[in-house]
Structures are given as C-alpha cells and as structure tokens.
Amino acid sequence: MLLLLQVALSATSAVAPKTQLDVMDSMRRHDAYAPLSHGRDTSSGDTHTTVTITAAGREKESAQFLLRSQTNRTVRVAVAPPASLPAGTVRVQRLCFDSATTETSDSKQSRTFPMRCPEAELRRGGCWVADPLLPIVNSTLFLPSGLTVSLWVTFAAPASPEFHGSTHTASLTVAGHTVILQLVVRRFSLPLTPALKNTVQLDVAHLHRCFPTDTEDETNRRYEQYALFALRELRLNPGSIYDSWRRPGAAPCRFHDYQSCFNTSAATLARWVHEEGLNAFTIPSSPMNQTRSFVADLRRHKISHLANL
Image (cartoon, rainbow, N blue to C red):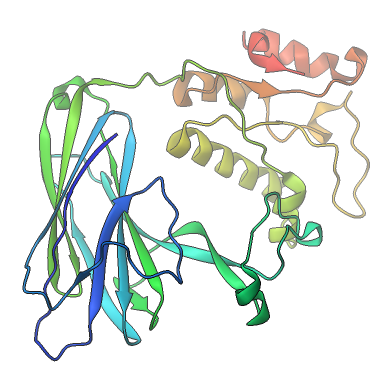
C-alpha cells in the first residue's frame, strides 16, 4: 500500500474550540489518551487536506483521520464518492473501543487476546482499547473532550481491467471542512482466490452468547453471514466449519449425522469456492465412519482436497 498524506484543516472562526487533526496509516492502532504526535491545530489557517491511496484491483486500503477536541463536540461527517466508480467504493467508519479492566485477558468474558491497561488507568477504573469499526450514524461524530477519535476511510478498488491505471477523486467533509481523497488503481488486480491458505476461527458458541435468543438455524445463518464477511472484506477463510458445542438443552452432536454438527453444507462451501475465493476449511478429525456422509458430499462437489483435519 502507498499512502501519501498532506494534512491541514482550518477552523470556521478564531474563537472556535480548538480541534486537532492528524492522518496516519490504518495499520497502526492509536491511543485514545495520548495527544496527537503530528496534530494540526484547526485554527492554524491551513484550509485543506489531501490523501492519496494506491491499491490493486480487488484490494481494500484505508487511511485514518484522528480528531481531538478540547471540548465535547458533535461534528457532521459526509462523503462524496467518486462518480467514476461503482457505488460502495468508499466507506467511512469510526473506530470504537472495548473496555479493559484488568492487566490480562479475562477468560470469563471469552477474550482471546490480552487487552493491556496501564496501571495508572486501572486505578481510575480501567481503560479503552481500540477494536471494532462501526458505521457513522446520522452523519454525525461525537468528539469527547481530551480523547482522540479515529475515522477510517476505506477504498475498495474495483477488479475490472477497465479501471487499471486510473485515478479517482472523492471528498470527505468533517465539521464543515473538505478533505480530498484520491484513489490510484494499480495496473493489475488481486486474484479472487488467495495464493496462500488461511483460516480464522468463527466460534458458534460465542455467536450464541452474543445472540442467545436465536434458534439453532438462526445461529448457523449468522455463522454464514460472518463467514462471507471474512471472505469478501478480509480475504480470510472461515476456520472450522463444524462445532461439537451444542446450545444448552440441545441434543448432542453426532458426526455421522453431519447436519447436527456442521455449520454449513458442502453445496454452500462449493459455491464459496467458485464465487468468494474460499481455498481451505477444517473438518473434524473424528473416526472416518462418523464423517463419511459429509466427506462423500465434499467429493461430489469436488472440493474434498481443500479440507483440513
């Protein structure tokens, strides 16, 4: 990814509350408490920001806009996508935070990774760790006093060869100030199917904890929704496509009857292989006589070679 930044932003009046703006690569997580290292004062007199992102076709690349206000403020956010690209090419999201109240992970809350919190912040009741990206609601963004808020602007470069080597311009308006966004599409596209196999675990038990009123069929549909998100947005394969966990009170999983254990069907996996770029998935390493019917289904769809134990 190539990210070229020219940063500046001005205030509407000299008496407006000071707000700082910084721009940095989206691969870096920022600290909500730390001041901006290269923040520009919005009353400095500069009047524009320009960001150029270079991406291959079928690639998604982002830039972060960091905002920090001296007072509590609600600002408006709007994006004007490039007219020369298909709808949905540009997406604006705000980076949200999860609370960390201990120095290590809390297994009772099923946290997979430690969420470190400085001891000084623990004494104040905990701290916030950057985690999910959520959509902007009603085109507004709240800036808490003394905290850094991040906007992610993501371009999805189209895969069609007609866009190779082209440049497209959009604009982002924050608090009445316009930011110029440029996308330069490289002269090639990434293949639909990644060259390397990969998987990310999708935990059905965790889905049940998040949506406890869902039926088993509804939980499986959510599994498929998140699997498609991983494939389309992140170019990651859903990991285990089976789960021996059963919701409380449900009949135990029986691998010989794969519909009671597997989160999706062989036909759906075959469609994902051809349409979404799936190149790996995991099946249980139980005795073969217990998974024979599912393996036979995989062979009928000619995708058994993608299965891992």
